[in-house]
Length: 249
Length: 317
Image (tube, rainbow over all chains, first blue to last red; front, top):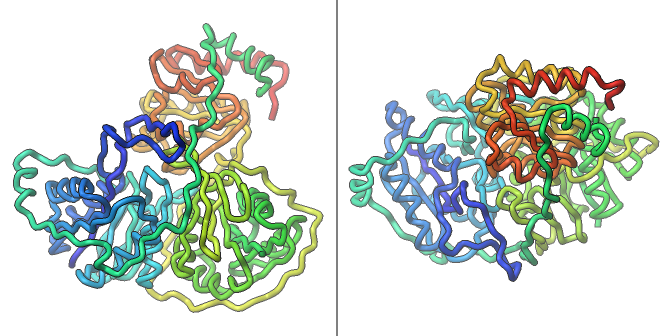
């Protein structure tokens, strides 16, 4: 079995994001970038399945500018066998990402495609479902547990009401929740070894996918600021304020 | 221009967020139709027809919809979209799972999680965990939009009498099978719609200590929330998680107890009307969004809080 895992380079989750003064986006210069957190879970799960002898190969793919390669290198350092970097500049919407991934799926013939359930930059939560749609594969979204069976996966999904379990036939798409596993750290020797692993580069334009934006970003603004609050000295003061000032209890 | 809203329900009742989605959808265009896909779900179609803002209900009743799988929903939705400019639903786990599957097959770039309707093609949506708001314009002919339910008031549920049309399902998807659902039943208000939410974080130290929160929630008729740290640590189940990857809540009163206030948590609660933070670390980022901050040991503060509430003559419900 072969698993393709899609990873995205995003602003690190600990960075306090700032909006650019001209309203064209957020500041990314000199800002720490990392792999989208649930994509780390996706890689970890694929590597674990391989270590359990249930998969032969894990391929990590990223789509983006030259620097996006860092995320594939990191995936290689924690156990992926091979990397693919599809080069494209600027914002690529989830629909176009899913079309690029479809081309790669047709080329590499994976049995499973894993990725994070949501990228923490655009917060779209679309790509996995879109890829499943255009491949006509089943989708197991927001996975917090995956059991590999002979020709299917049993997946526990996080839903608003609690948990849901579904069984999807292989080939399938899985989008991973942060609770799926605990991603490992790359050791220095493995980071060095990863540099020797194959990393194929493809230009998005060579795949014949139209990546033109369908959604125009008119402006990006700061969220409304909250009025500065106060510190109360005691519980009784707090309750009095809530009762008499805020009038919420 | 007509809008098709996909109803979220449990085959008996409409789920509460459908009413919020109705409000948003009718702001896009008043000619709002609702598609109900369910199994033995006549009562749902009827409830949808009674919403005054709804002009028409299309009802497809078939056993393939028993568990609301995105795959079976999608083939049927695609059969019904011809006359619509917009396909919309709530941006909760139901809509997040479903809508991109529909959008991709319509070759539409979906607009996710909108918090305001600016015009028929232009919407406001949070990005970067709500640290920025983007105004975006969809240039696709057919638009697929998911709606952040807590950003819109629920529509009135009675007084309407829209026509209900029966229709036929699309193909059944064979490669996916529902196994089970573990719903956590509770007598408390739903987290997403509660007037008061009290949440615990890693500072609670274990699941047993959540009793302190439960006692106050009982008193205030509040829903119970949690930070991801508390859920990951196993103190409480995942359906309580508030944050970027959990639920977004906008109650009148949000009480954060033992929660430091990571960016991801703030994304789920910082639009609340009044925020209270109780934390022993005076430097915790949660205090930057709190209207009332109490720097205190929660194990002393929570019992005192309950005591003070007990002294009050009346408490809003």
